[in-house]
Image (cartoon, rainbow, N blue to C red; front, side, top):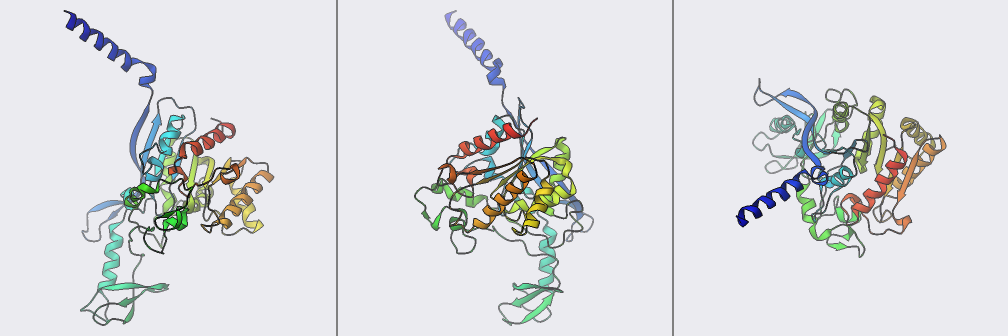
Length: 383
């Protein structure tokens, strides 16, 4: 009898936990594919596949108190940079969702992580190489830059090495990760503020470099479109195109968070569909504007209009060779403020916060930086 009573009390207590408001509150996780287009396979006529769609991870809080926010990763990076950290802490996606924002983490359509990778591009490229009439017995070739107006100039390797011919190739070939940790080309240690050289971290660096292999393992395969007229009719930019149907699905103006080179999406999106965006967050932009000339800055500020605009910059800017982009972001901030708009600038080193990197969303104080952004949004972006 006593055993039955204990079991009954345990069941009552367990049910109470399940029904408690704090236990019911949470975040609903999901995956959605935005945009894309259906094409015929070049290797199997009649069969169609989807390409250039973007994979979107969704984190929707039960209690929504903030505006929806779309997080876009920088060049050569996937949504992983927002979804977690190499050492297992909460990512910005979860932190912002816990603060009441519906979060949509966008993967670039042209990257393999999205599933929008167009295999036809591979086939087209291979076909172009195989028809190398100068060396039919050895079709293996390597790209020879720069691009030729009539195609790509190919230098053969192996038998007949050194011969050159021009072949028609509509796209750049798919490539491995854009970034590296063990070469001088696009080395993340020097480019992103991890350290002077590979495996030589700065003493105060806040990135969890002991687990950097997790970052390396996520680097996606990618291809880049040379011709976008046929596949990005709204924005003219394949990376930005799928953001339009995503915003339309969300059904209300969104906060758009852009990181690094993906800031190039700002201009085509604001020109094509300004109604979709309520506020803009710039994380160490590259290519917001072509240059720092006053006319260029003013033109971009006019494009932003009355939307709140926030820039965030971390440490080691001079060491990373990114002083110009920081100064440009400051000039844009000043221009927006001068026209009566709302513009903010979070300069972490100026606050005495050192050691943050280009991947501040994964640094060991990522929760503090997220908190500053969330506080700014609460103060300047109304529901």
